[in-house]
Length: 247
Image 1 (cartoon, rainbow, N blue to C red):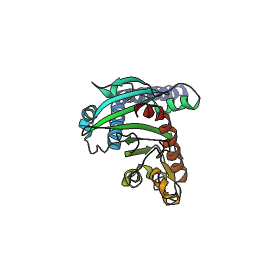
Image 2: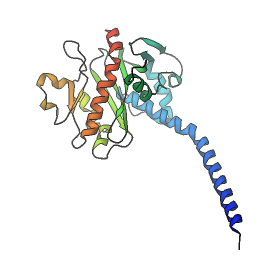
Image 3: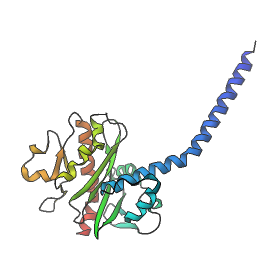
Image 4: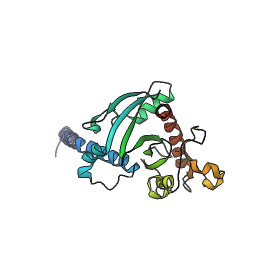
């Protein structure tokens, strides 16, 4: 019979070895995980501008090819960094933590936000990353605007843990395509910022003149729909100073 001390030491050694192996494996896998996350992020950025179906193996090259400029702006809409050459995925814009910057905004602290430009047959598409909160956790995405910095070209949304069949529908084409099936704009005829409202009960509840600024909410996904609505309003509003400087 082994003594209690022997069993305890044996178990402790096994635990230490297992922890060391797991730690080593995590360290070895981390670069691959980070690369996959970066590739997924690049794909989402491009997809919002309708650049889709790019193989992961060439995503980084295509991202650097299609993105003609990666910008960083401050809360006043001033450009503080512009990257037009090289590996844009290593630039400041691509590595900005949206959650952190929007937290700074909410607390009245200076903040910075990224913008991406894509050339579409001689016309510029502007892509604005988004970040917000759904029912069960963070939601995020990108919205692309045409050269007029008003008309929506496309969107992508994603989430961490929204309910399948309900809130998780924000990441489906059925929801995203609403932003482009008909013309949607973020400013009204008086050039006042309106955002794009996610309307419970559908845009038909809005006056006909306002439907250009709204999409249908997800049936049964009210809280997530509200989260997307708030995300669009809060983040796009943060880009308005930059947009106004370009007009």
